Length: 399
Image (tube, rainbow, N blue to C red):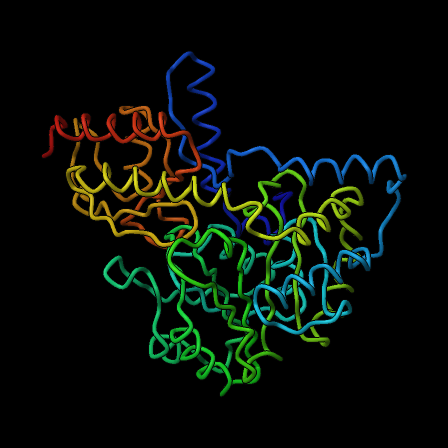
């Protein structure tokens, strides 16, 4: 008897956690491993946010919150969306969740029936495809390449749409590629989606502030798709609040109420103290936290100066987030020091076991020819990691 549901059996373990767990095992064995696997800022939470959390505890905000979040937090989110994105929402259109991941799941659970299709531009964040499977949907993958900065075109999108299409799910800035869609690119995508009112856009904007090359654009700015768009964001990346688990969705009213209904039966409201601290974070001028973005930019430039010279790597210059996603197809299908490299996951494991640098293979990101490096690490570790890989691949035996 199979004890597990078909839903569970359809899903895979997160490859990022598979690799990070392997790193921990090797470190426990005394092996000097540098991990560039997880997408987590390595900064401490800013002091004013921590102070706000202490104040919330002292003021006894330790009880259940309303399902969609405290009203003053939802109003602060509306203020942030107006200030930073010129988006007009009211508090009833906001649902605060246990991280941005739950916010995405709320939307998918609200709109996806068995057999519905969700378009995923590849590469995509590892959980997207698994979330679609969880909801009984089917992912339609639209491939991109390093030559196009891993971005789809409006023409590609329209070709992927069928009568079963219910959603387009993407991130901009993108995990894992570090690319972002410009105003003009999103406008062309919006013009396509506007022709199909049954399609909901799920726009994951969690890396919004980690953008080195220009102003962030939300596709919800285009009025032709405002009523079709769920904006997803949260506190983890810009404010280094990964463990606080606060995300949110901003949706048209019809979808916001659906998300609240789903969440009310799943987890109810998010952590009360973390919600109160998030108000302080959102109301603070973004320039106060700019030091983290500036540091990421320095690391991006450092890694680029080293990674572009690694043999067999094809790399572009990422303009946002904190990832590199080099194409390592040169090594696919070859045997390195007696190990056959079937795809990027095999290559990532090969690097971990031989160069002792932890990365994540691109198969679960929708691209079997690339691997992901997070540069949310110290300059010392980043320099050492790139040097280790370069030195190892310089001397590897290829057959």
